[in-house]
Image (cartoon, rainbow, N blue to C red; front, top):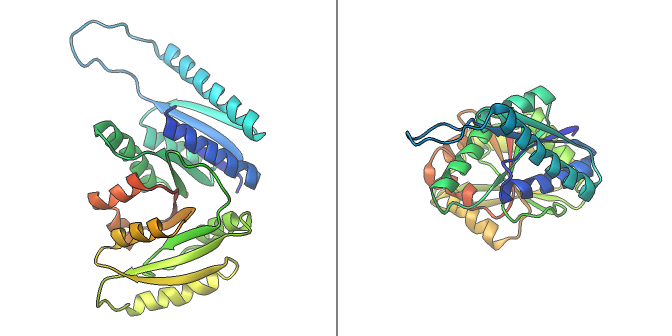
Length: 274
């Protein structure tokens, strides 16, 4: 892994995500880039107000990003690049990730308590949906520690592509004590299809260099089952694959399932297979 891009809005969740990304960058010898994207203020009433120039906004934001970068450089002894752009945050993150050749995008997340939190969460959801590179969502208060227990949730309905597999191997290669639990949740009475059985058979040799084991769970709700398992079994990272028209996409298209992401207390690594 050569390059990590971190989206920041200077909030506590994004600062925590930047610190987590800095630890990963140091571990993997990767370049870290902080990106702040902002929109120009728009009048919402006829009440007069002082309009700040684009130049002033740019300068102020560049100062804040620079200060943040210097703090990370001093703490983690790494080089941190900075980018400040005007535009919709999710779109800018996806665009700039392509421009700099980022291997991983990192963004923060906090639990939903009000409308503002839902807005912030929607930006993270948009990044996950639009990105063509893996996205690591880091919940507020998460502090990096070596990955020992990783859960990969799948229904085996697809075969992981080489790009996803490469990222998993890179991350696991620098986490020597990592073990991946491959979790499949089936509804009561459900039987795996021929396609799912074939997917599981194809997956196993692909993961031969990654210590792993399998666990089948039974529950009427996939997301509730995962939440319960993660609650009962200390886990460092949850891994899912975003595959076009896949179980993952159907799962996260429902609003109550997105709450699992908002409320997650562990990082979520979304591998892009689309």
